[in-house]
Amino acid sequence: MTDLPSYRFALEQVQPRVSPGGLAREASVAEFPVSTGLSGVSMWLKPGGLRELHWHTNAAEWGYVVAGACRTTIIHPDGRAALDDFGPGDVWYFPRGYGHSIQGIGGEECHFILVFDNGAFSENATFSLSDWLAHTPREVAAACLGVATETLDGLPDGEVYIALGPVPDPRPSPDVPLPVGSRSTTAEHHRYRLLAERPRSFPGGSIRTVSSVEFPISRTMAGAVIELEPGAIREMHWHPNADEWQYYLEGAARMTVFASRGQARTETFAPGDVGYVPMGFGHYIENTGPGPCKVLVAFNSGTYQEIELSEWLATNDDQLVSTALALPTDIVAGFRKTGGFIVRERR
Ligand code: MN
Ligand code: MN
Image 1 (tube, rainbow, N blue to C red):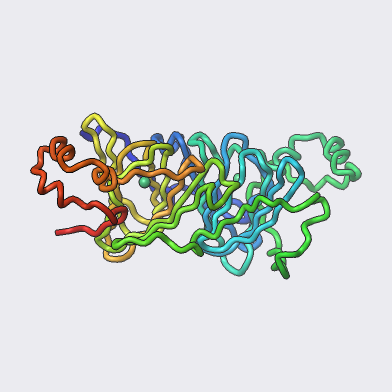
Image 2 (image 1 turned 90 degrees about the vertical axis):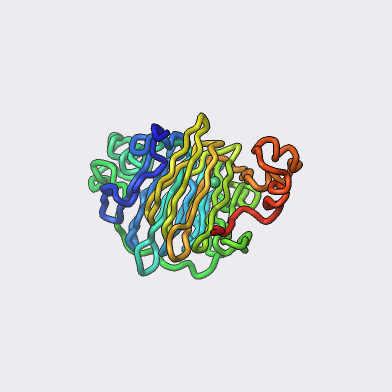
């Protein structure tokens, strides 16, 4: 059956939203109908490019830096604040509703992927500082900011989105004090160095995972980077508790999604493509290219859960599996009992 919707979206083919300091491409449920539980954005910031101060009410934000470097600021509702620098392979998490900003630092453009735990989230409907002030009487804004009304004549007349300013100074040390308004720095760290983690390794590749266990503030989302060697398969599996949103970073892949009722769909993925697997749907990913295949995945639960086919069958006795599959017991006895997850294709 092929009346299933597509689980693939060519994100980097989308016309970007361009601002002075950078650009963004978005995949929400409006563009990618199956992705009801998660949405995503691919953003590029020039050095000094500032995704302006903003917040969003309908989703938390999970970020992964692909290339370059950036700096984020965030305020918590209790007045604590944080400023963190990020490089390739680093992850951030901003709870829903907390005010934050992202700025490109260093000498090259910064590329990162943002994932949100709500398919209806849109980058075009965030609460931006410039938009708010543009729709506030000048006298009110001046009173709140503690300055004379006429000093605000130069405020933008609408949402800036991504401004362009000077590249901020490198921080001389991690002990540099926060700006004067910060009551204290937050103890809840927003940065997790995912690629610095030692991966779980398998004969066909590796995975690095981050959930609220390793990264406590990331209460509603988890993520991983999966690397598949040529000919490797991320084993048939499902996630009982979360939808899965994928961004293909490198290589060539094919993913098949099993939707029950005799329905499955296979699609091919290239770098810049997004994949989506609804909660509980069976799936597997094959590396179909000559080189390594690298996939970023994010989940809309802070708890990472998975069930692998081979592991599941190995917890049932051979007679039961033999009955279920109408195969002789000695064949079932030869099924993989341990060491699945990322396997090599056998010909
Ligand atoms: Mn945001
Ligand atoms: Mn999966």
